[in-house]
Image (spheres, rainbow, N blue to C red):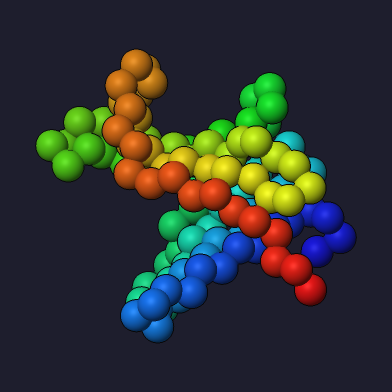
Length: 111
């Protein structure tokens, strides 16, 4: 995609797959991310955001399990030639509280 997008893919031991496509939009100057998985859904969830310092931070509106307003935030960091790291977490609207649900350490696939 001419350097304007990144795709990642997971393969799990149970045979299920998931991944995402992160595409940079020059029109809006932000990243748009769409997640997909083996389980078919009628529409793909999307996150939106931008680079902040040496990180890329993306948001998707999502209430907490208790119904509190907030976002699901994805933070990509530690970019290097070998890969990058990312964390997914729920945050309240003020971002004063966060609840991480995963941390992923991505390594570039050797071709």
